[in-house]
Image 1 (tube, rainbow, N blue to C red):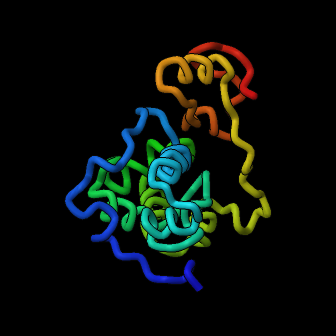
Image 2 (cartoon, helix red, strand yellow):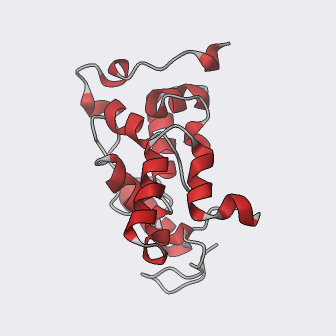
Length: 175
């Protein structure tokens, strides 16, 4: 089956690192991956996921993705190193203040690896039966400004935080 073909990191960019889209400073990894998918011309999202994360379904986790070391190598750290991506473009940054540094580093290590189940285990979510929300939140004011400035809107990391209901910039309810 095509989705199970192994990924080859060296083939993503070749000598053309310009093919990767730029990222907004507060853009989620999931949002950036979606923009890469559209720009790449890939028809199948599994192909995009294999290119970026080395596995056909790894890119489908909007909150706490795994395989960030693969992403770092595949993109030549285009978005930063794996720990920076985890803390600034995923929900890991939201959870950081609630954990001692050692436990937070275990979470980051799990996100860098290829065992997504270990991520929720580090947070204690696998035992608590709490599921993370798969609903994206967006500020209508941010969307309008981004469409005018960029031609597209994107998901902001802070808007996706579990406790966030208002846009910090516009002070309006998130949709």
